[in-house]
Image (cartoon, rainbow over all chains, first blue to last red; front, side, top):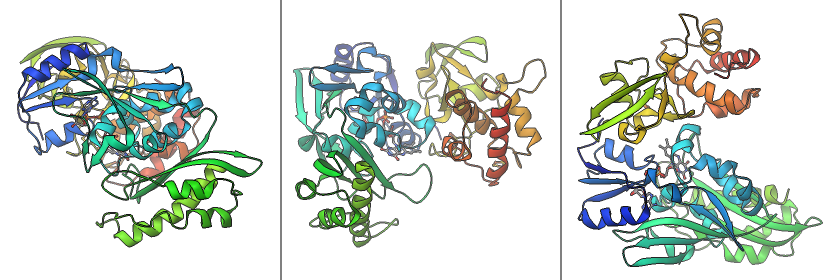
Length: 283
Length: 156
Ligand SMILES: Cc1cc2nc3c(=O)[nH]c(=O)nc-3n(C[C@H](O)[C@H](O)[C@H](O)COP(=O)(O)OP(=O)(O)OC[C@H]3O[C@@H](n4cnc5c(N)ncnc54)[C@H](O)[C@@H]3O)c2cc1C
Ligand code: FES
Ligand code: FES
């Protein structure tokens, strides 16, 4: 299948991209890696009149340090995030999660910012960003604003990015040396998460001192497991103790029921995967 | 229409294309390079895999205009002077194809995998090929072929 016809612009700066978005009216789409958008256009589930491609804006690509933050450009492809030494050092959880996204070809094209802007509830980068307290930098004609992860993900496929705005970068507070694990459950290769658990933690002598935990695909937006985080602090990393600390992790969640499993099944999965994820992270 | 220039299998081409033209469609319909095939509409099967600036991509999910100014390598660029490349020879030797439809994509992705990891385990080969589907389900021999190719240093 071939997309419906559209006008195409490939700006080389954020300012130019914002101007093009402003001039293009309502029916315009931003194109990043195209790994979600192009399949949608091919199936004609969307048929924008104008496409603004961010692929030639070099300033949006790459990983850098800025004081206490690790800054990841929106157009950094998944495979670069997954192999970046700064990410490994300061936000290992992002590396672990990014490695599970799709397949190698999709990871060569798909971008960090694209996956987050797309905000598929089954997407694997949302929960890790929430667990790490990431901040989202959004540029618009009126200037730039920064949105906390908890406010960025608003609903199913809906974020704080407004029409005419662009996600430029994500600022992740450094979690230097924290251990991490992303436990993803899917039925076959190259698949989206049925449920997944993102964990990053610090431990000393077999005891967990601090943990951050978030859930993928257990609702319309990623969920931070604050109670489990508190219960894990000071706990010995043994199967029994960890199972007890995360036993209530699915309480109050309203996960979807679909062909992959109903809500009860997902709640059960979440508790099992959380135990595995914490134990794997604690190593 | 937009004018684009790209290098495909070592030859530079300049053409006018519609913005919505997919890279695979440009390769097949405008350049006549039908070695790269289309197996799905959903970016799942990997049959259309080519290299864009040296990395594997699904050419059904890249616009031709996005590849403007870049370098593309297809399965048609593998053999030199009628001599099969080591990866092609390995697929031939190991009977790693049945109907052959997935083979161009499998070989292009295998090369990407071997460039990154010249001596992969069977598990790593299977993971590296997770974006490529063989409808004939001949995965066993495909893994064998990649292993053989690795032994002969086939990274290009
Ligand atoms: C076969 C397959 C399997 C996949 N499996 C997984 C998986 O297991 N886990 C997972 O997490 N993802 C998966 N994905 C999706 C993949 O991660 C995509 O890369 C991602 O969803 C979209 O990123 P992109 O850069 O390709 O964005 P695009 O497809 O270009 O854009 C996606 C959407 O975000 C908007 N957008 C993109 N960038 C910006 C920006 N900077 N500012 C504002 N809006 C923007 C676009 O307008 C569009 O609406 C899969 C994709 C495929 C094709
Ligand atoms: S044809 Fe490109 S992935 Fe199936
Ligand atoms: S050989 Fe037939 S699809 Fe793989």
